[in-house]
Each structure stands twice: as C-alpha cells, then as structure tokens.
Length: 318
Length: 297
Ligand SMILES: [Zn+2]
Image 1 (cartoon, chains in turn green, purple):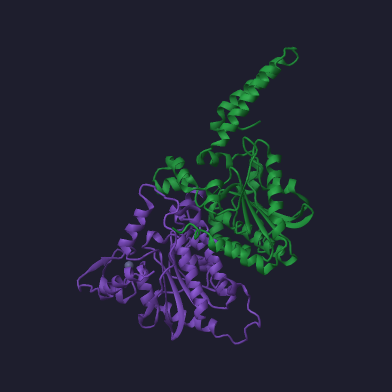
Image 2 (cartoon, chains in turn green, purple):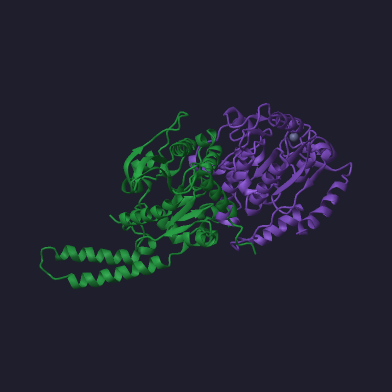
C-alpha cells in the first residue's frame, strides 16, 4: 500500500479512482482504457507539479517518508559480495549503524550507513536509525579497516539524529561522534558520503566528512530538526514550517551555500515512488564521483578533504 | 583590518580598571547565601560557602590562566556575517549586535597567547556570555586560528569550553564547524603539540561532539554539565528520571570519559604541570613529520 503525504492528496484521489475503475471493469468487458489514461496523465501532471515546487517543510515529510529506500536497500542493490561486519569491539553492537565489506561496480569498498528500518520490528532492531556511541565506534572501526586495506568508503546517511538517551550519554555519545568525524577526516582512502533521507545534525556529520558529499534531490541535512528549532527559537512548536524555511537545509540550499557537492535527481514523486530508480541514480552518481578520487594518493586526498572543509563558509565573504 | 583591535582594546583597559565597591553583594545560585563580590574575585568566582563554581567570563579565564595575568589577544579572522539572513523572533544580526554590546566581545571565543609557567602557550576560551557560547563560523574560524598559532609558536593549546551547542541561526554552516574545528585538532596532533581541554559548565551539543572531546588530556571543572544531548531532550525522549549527577563532570570521570575533575583554584597549576610534561619530549620526533600541516599553513 502506497502511503500518501498530505500534499499528495489530489494524486491519491486520482490513483484511487483509477484503482476503483479497474476493479469495476474487472471481468465486465467495459473499456476503461481511455478514462484510466486520462486520469493517469492528470495524476502524473499533479505529481510533477507538486514535486517541482516542494516547500522545505514538504521536503521534510518526503525525506522522512517510510517507503523511501533506506541504507540497507542501497547496500542490497548497489553492492555485490556484501559481507556485513558487526560490533565495536568494546562490548556492544548497535544496528542503528550498519556496515560491511562489498563490491561496488567491481571495486572492493567499505559501506557504512544509518538504517531506520521499514516496519515496527526492524525499526526497533535499528533503533529508528538513531545510533548510540557503539554504533559510531563500529563505524570508526570500519573506517580504520578501510584505511588499512585501501578500500574506498561509501556512507549512506539517514537519521533524525544520534540517540539522546541516558545510556548513550553514559558511554560518551559526544566523544563517539567527535572521534568519528576525526577518523573520517584522516582516512587515507576516498570517502563518498550520501544523504539519502534525513541528515540529522551531529548524528549525520559523524559519517559526513567525505571527499564528496551528495544529497538526493528531496533529502534534507540540518543542524537541528525544524520542530526543535521552532520550539527553541520561536518558542512555538507549531512554527516548524517557518523554521524549515529559515534553516536552509534542502539539497538546493546547501549546494548554493557550497556545503555539499552534488544533488542526485529523484524519480517524479520522490524516491519512495520508484525506489530502485532512486538507488540506481545515486549509484551512478557515486561511481562518477568515486572514480577520480581513486586515482589520488592518500596524502593528497587528506589534504584536499581538509581544504574542502576549511574553505566552507569562507567563499561567500562579503 | 584593525577594526577589531580598535574595538576591543579600549574596552579591555576599562575592564581592568574596574573598581568593585566594598559593599557589593551577590547571591550564590547554588546555596543561596550572600557573598561579597570582592571576595568572589579573590576566590576565582567559587562560592566560599559551598564551593560552587560560578560561570566565569572569557576575560576572567584568560587573566586567571596566564602568568601574572598577562597575555596578548589575537585578532580573530573575519567571516561572512549572517549568510542565511536568519530571523526568528528577532533578526540574527540584531542578536549579534546585542551580544557584542553586552559582552564587549566580538564572538563566543577569545584567543590569546602568553606564558604559562614560563613557557609559551596559546589559550582559547569560549565565552558562554556571548549567545550561550554557540558555535558558528566565527567560532570555528577562531578555534582553527588558535590551532595555527600554536603550531606557529610550537606551543601547547589550552581550550576552555562552554557552549549551548550549535549556532542555529547559521544553519548547516554551524554544523560544518564540527569537522572544521576537528581539522584544527589534527594540525596540533601532527605537529606533536599538546592539546588540553578544560570542560566548563556547560559544554553540550556540537562543541562537545567535536573539539571539546578530542583533547590529549581532558579536564573538567567540578559539577560542570557536559554532554551531547541536553538533559531536557533526554528526559523528553526516554521519559525516565535522570540519574543523580547525570552528565556532571564527576559522572563523566566515573564513566571513563575524562581524565580528571580539577577545582578552579588548582587549574592553573594543573595546566602548567600537564602541558610541561606533555611538552617535555624525551624521545626524538619522527624523522618525517606529516606534510599536511605544511600544505595548510
Ligand atoms: Zn554557594
């Protein structure tokens, strides 16, 4: 069952009508082709129109859509020989971050991602994609492993943020995130980071310090959720819409601020409509970005990566 | 480029000359007892009744840390102001202006160099009094400048942290200060220079999850609140009572996240000793230092 967002209601109604028509016509021999065709075109047009001018707040809904492909979907479709690796070697395993070895278009890589899960059971297993320190420490271990064996790193970011729990704080959430950023920045191998849904603040940047940072067209990447920003800055949780406008967290905003490198177009109606197409499009973009990086020696890579981050925000000096 | 020096210097002179009347009292927010302001200045703002460490101003930290309270502030690099043209209930530019007027500081970090126990040292202090020490582009740039200065002077860097987290009004530019400041720490590391963090009340959010947790030695002031998520956010998420002393300096020490909790009166001596020991290399440096610092200098 397709889940529709509020702003997709007109499309939902049209698609329901089409389904009804098909059901009615079933076995009746009535020719509905023309009517179905007409309605489909109308729905398509509305979808195109809606997705052509999504507001930041609508993008939040799309980025968080339960039927969007999550990290695991990218692993499954983009990698062969995928071999999951687990554990932080410090006493814990956190499935909010998944990762392992695999081949990406023939090239051995390490893949790491935050995974939200797709139904209640898997969401619980993955803690809704909110990692604890052990998740970040597992990621650190994989980054170091990749460095030792000269394997490029692909990260897939989709999280509402690091887990704000007592246990997480007790085990050093802040340090775990800091160390992850530290290790990504000093990795001697290429890192291509992709924000595939929601890039939630510190929990996202922990896997985001890459040589190239890609975002799906309707993904968001924000220092704070619009809901939290609304209640802190506007002292009114109902102002999330306004906060969303102000925070400039869409892929389009971030590309123009030069904080990301590339936007990967999504299928009409978002990645949730045609997940395979979305995954393939990102795979294509990653391949294009990764290729030239693989030709660079580790010192050059690290220097360029640092220069990239150090230059951020300086360009627009007025 | 002297706008900053011109702006700040006369104000500092004014601050140093400030006379506190003998009869000025204040109340300790911890034990609610009356304390003479004069006494507080002598006790480094620690309550004589209960030992509560009150929040200190950035300039006070500098004076307490350097030998004889003598130091030279550096001019902070310029950054684009309000790139998002952010406005919540108030314009961000207004908030900045008000903070500057109120604190006489340019941003939420001051960087100075001077002597610490007779040796060169660079000290960066976060100013909680400036928009709750939130981290935006200016702060990130100030921290990187402090790291560069330490590398140039071959001196240790001591940073006092105090932060409410990210400067939300700078959106993702604020988040990007986490990798940017981390690069600063890496520059120190590759130059084999000591990097000492003193966590003061409170240190949370993006600052705690970047340069504040990457020190060679991690020190905290007694009872300082230190954590990634704020206690209220955690309470709202887990709907449990938070444990006694949760996210306080002693709690972090007991859970292995910091090296020591040091009372303010012993801080300067501790910093001199630790930086002295870390800086007293007894084996030779590796023949080849990483080239990365050179490329970035
Ligand atoms: Zn007291």
